[in-house]
Amino acid sequence: MVTFLLNSQMNHIQEEKADLTLLEYLRENKKLTGTKEGCASGDCGACTVVIAEVSKTNEQTLKYKAINSCVTLLSALHGKQLITVEHLSDNNKLHPVQQSMVDEHGSQCGFCTPGFIMSMFALYHQPVEADRETVINALSGNLCRCTGYRPIIDAALNVCANKADDKFSQAASQTITALQSIDKNAIDTDNLIIPTSREALAAAIQDYPDAKMFAGSTDLALQITQQLHSFDKLISLSLVPELIAIDSQEQGVMIGAALPFNEIEPVLLKHFPDLSELLWRFAATPIRNQATLGGNVANASPIGDMPPVLLALNAIIHIDNGTDKRTIPANEFFLDYRKTALQKGEWVAAIFIPYLAPNQSIRAYKISKRYEDDISAVCAVFNIALDNNKVVSLSAGFGGVAAIPAIVEELNQAVIGKDWSNSNTFEIGKQILSKAFTPLDDVRATKEYRITMLENLWKRFWLESNHQANTIATRVVHVPHSTGVTSHA
Image (cartoon, rainbow, N blue to C red):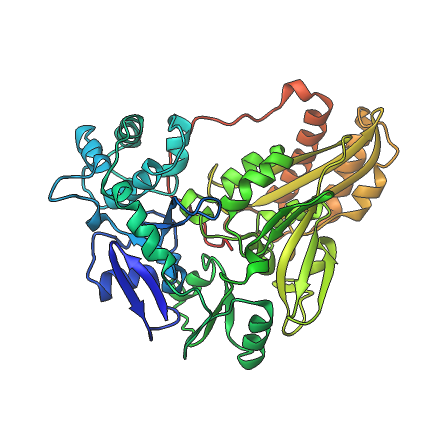
């Protein structure tokens, strides 16, 4: 039985469709139509709601985060509080974020306004200083076509600069008590299984080999909302301890496959700060609050953003079947289009990423039609180790140019021992990359464009790593918009 707080009321869902999205549940079952349906693919933010859960690091506090209800399945609410726009006002008095939107004239047609309000509300309850960059990041994924973003950003800046207790902070202790009272035992209904151990997960897979497994559901839900597929039985990975743990070890970081990106991002950026732009451009905040690294890997999409990173960093994929565990180097995991080395009954349990050595540096580049929150046309990640400017090692991962996330071993070997500052080294790599792939033409890019981009990104990497003070690309001031993402994790 899925149990959660809907606004302030405890809800128990015994039998419901396994593939019921949160958006459909709110609008059709509960008639809470303040949450809007726009794209039904996590692109526009009109469906944004907020979930609150007891913090893993401090059980006396609640953690608030915005999510896209159109790509979230109802089962994801188990043990959490769901807050919708209808619940923000207090005795017919607008919540401070709502009042700020009014004061700053941040709404015209109003269709997108509930989504913006909920993203602002989540930020309002986060213990961060809300500068302009923080606000823009929090509002990312919310698309407005008529108001313009300046007054919306101003509304968020003003209200977050003058935070005061609201009815949610005043009721925090009662909410925490209610959430902690929810039974966190495994769930096994006719349509949904949420196991709480690797052994139980293995049993569920054995009993229902055709059932789909999911964690964040940001990709699986697209099959429901865009392709109109129906799933009678689903297996959620959200309560298996090994899949939701992160461990900074001596040699590297072990990341549970079912952890959302926004939970692993601080650890990744601590050890790999040069991944910041790629992680930021991966997807908007509501998607990053749900999408998982394990999903991005197991999907084996040739345009996924993280597989090239894992290839370049020589990551190790940890595989489990409930009885035996094994490891696979990332460069041996992707076999063919959407095909991996996973065997029947196995799942991705974790991803181990070794730390960089002192003489190593990494660069990650993404080319897409929109600057942020869009699918890659080309993704290239380079990891180089130098000794007195001689190449000790090079590993690189590429996306968008083949049927699988790929490496070019010839490139890696050809530059070893070469003087990295010598232009001949650059030319060697350029010639290899110009012939390494035969990309497809599609709506994102032509074959010729992709090959040219590979050559150009190699040149950019060579120039930047030889001239550290002259980094070519800098993060620009941007405005939030649609995520434009049709495949996440």
